[in-house]
Structures are given as C-alpha cells and as structure tokens.
Length: 373
Ligand SMILES: Cc1cc2nc3c(=O)[nH]c(=O)nc-3n(C[C@H](O)[C@H](O)[C@H](O)COP(=O)(O)OP(=O)(O)OC[C@H]3O[C@@H](n4cnc5c(N)ncnc54)[C@H](O)[C@@H]3O)c2cc1C
Image (cartoon, rainbow, N blue to C red):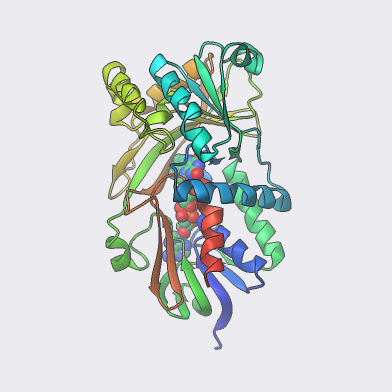
C-alpha cells in the first residue's frame, strides 16, 4: 500500500498544532493533523481563552504575544470566532496591589509600549455601572483578547478543514522519524513533522522530552453564574496576578503583594491561586487559576481550593455566584524556559509550552516554526 505524503504532518490538535497547520496551509503546503481524541480535549479547550499581551514578561513572550494578537484577529474573522477585543481589567484590591499597577504604568508600560491605562476615581466608578467601585484601581489592558475555547477550537478545525487541512482524529501517533510517522491508522510520509503533543512527554520523543525536565501543573476550574447578572465584556484578573505574570512579578513593588498574601491568606500561595475570570457567550463566567505542580496530575480536586477561588470571585464581582460546572485543566510547566522549539532530527521539530500562556503566544509560535522550514 502506498503511504500518503504531505508537506507538513502535525501531531496534536491543540492550539499549537492548529497554529502550525494554519501557518502551513497559508503557505500552500499540504498539511495533515493527527489527534488521538475525537476532538481537541487538552489544555486548549479547558482554559480561560485569554490571549494576553499585558501580562507577558518583557522579551520573547511579549514579542510573541504581540504577533499572536494580530493573528488572532485575522483567524477570528476568517473562522467566525466570537473574539472579545475589549481588553482585560486587572483589579487592585489593596494598596500594595495598586502600587504595583502604578509602578508598571509609569515605568515599564511606557518604556516597552504596553498599551494600558490605569482607571481610578470616576473612571473606575463608571465601569459596569459601578459594579467594581469597591476596588482601588483597575489596569485596562487594551491589547488583550478573549475567546470561548471549547467552541473556538472546533471552529478552527472546521475552518482549516475548509482550507484543505486533512484531520485524522481518534488516531494516535506512535512514533516519528525523519520523513515518516507511524500511527494507529498506518504509516504516513511527510517533508516536515511537528510534534505539538502538549504535556504528554512519554508517547513520542520521550528521551528528548525527559532532558527538558518538564513538569505539569493541574488547575481546578469552574463555570459559574452571577446571581446579579453582569454583561461582562472583558477578561478579568486581580492584583494577585501581579506575583504570577512576568510583566509585573519582578517589579520591586510586587514584594509587598507577596508579603500581604503570606500574611493574610498563605493558602493562596500554597495553591498558586490568582483569580482569573472570563465571560462565556452565555453570560456566565469561567473562573479559576490554582496551580498544583508535579510530574503527573493528581485526579483529586481540593474543595478548599474551589472555595478560595469562589470567595475571590464573589469579592471581585461584588455578588454571589452559583457553580454550574467544574473540571480540571493540565498544562506543561517548568521546562527550561517558557516554551521549547526542539529540532529533534532532520525535518522533525517538537514545539512545547512550559507555561500557561499557549493561547496567548501559540499562533505566533506556529508562524515562526513554519517560516523557518
Ligand atoms: C485550565 C487552563 C487555563 C489556561 N488558561 C490560559 C489562558 O487563559 N491563556 C493562555 O494563553 N493560556 C492558558 N492556558 C495554557 C494553554 O491552554 C496551553 O499553553 C495551550 O493550550 C497548550 O497547547 P498545546 O497545543 O501545546 O496542548 P494541548 O491543547 O494539550 O494539545 C495537545 C494535543 O496533542 C494530542 N496528542 C498528544 N500526544 C499525541 C499523540 N502521540 N498522537 C496524537 N495526538 C496526541 C493531545 O490529545 C492533545 O489534544 C491554560 C491552560 C489550562 C490547562
């Protein structure tokens, strides 16, 4: 039997795999994508869908996120995604958090061109009819975007299929070697193979991946409804993100936020909690962002973690919430840098995220890898 040939063979239909497939088909390559599940079910559909520029550390992540911003706008329009482009709001709840935002706004934001504005006083009081008036300040990140990933990923698949990308779902790739992939649907040949297998470090290229000493982190996630409705249009973060995201975490003012967390609620640090919230198209919120690091993801959810995040959400949105759904998300974490692009062998490249920002930078990583072929 003749083996089917394509110019580009991609393993994984998460955002990284789809980014590479899109970059390839745009350049006129023949592209096929292999995904072991029947539809994308990994980190890329379990997340907040926040494509953030504002939180990115200066350097490669900021550059990638800026490039990805334009790509999301292009893909959003082409694939008919409901992409929110009103930006993000990061609420400072304490003086220490407010000081970080002030320092960021007058220093780093100006120097490096982050497009942000600090809302206080009347500007904050007017936001959403005064719903957030109990906060001290809000950093409005103008470049941030957000989508509902569980709907967006299948929509991107359909869009790419329409462009001619061949998808092989429910098909595991067992092995890759230069020019060839062995799958549960047989052997396939390809000029270039890109492995975007997310946090699966064992099925493919296990030795090369082990050398990166990657870990995973497990996040508890909730979909909730506010009892007092709010037509939220922004991605929401809180001052706790100031110690989590690289745009803020190395500012000297962030130390006071760390000290405040340790003094007032050390469990937030223990569980790596910083509240994020994203609106769904149905008027609900996705909330979460706890972090449990390790070599494997434990299956057990800690109710105390959910309770802490629900309390934070109720304070942030000044209203009670009702839980509709809970799930776990897992992503690749703590490798040698925020991501790896590994030339494994002639025509075989592995592209992996080691931090929870693949929705923000993934489209740009795909462009860059494929442009380098
Ligand atoms: C709860 C949560 C919230 C997050 N929130 C955000 C956010 O708001 N903004 C942001 O920028 N980032 C966020 N992230 C991070 C982001 O989702 C990830 O960085 C990104 O989705 C990683 O994409 P990926 O394609 O590498 O992995 P995945 O989406 O996990 O995709 C990998 C795919 O490869 C498939 N696969 C693996 N091995 C094989 C094989 N051998 N054969 C066939 N198929 C295979 C898997 O089945 C899977 O579908 C979040 C992550 C989580 C878990």
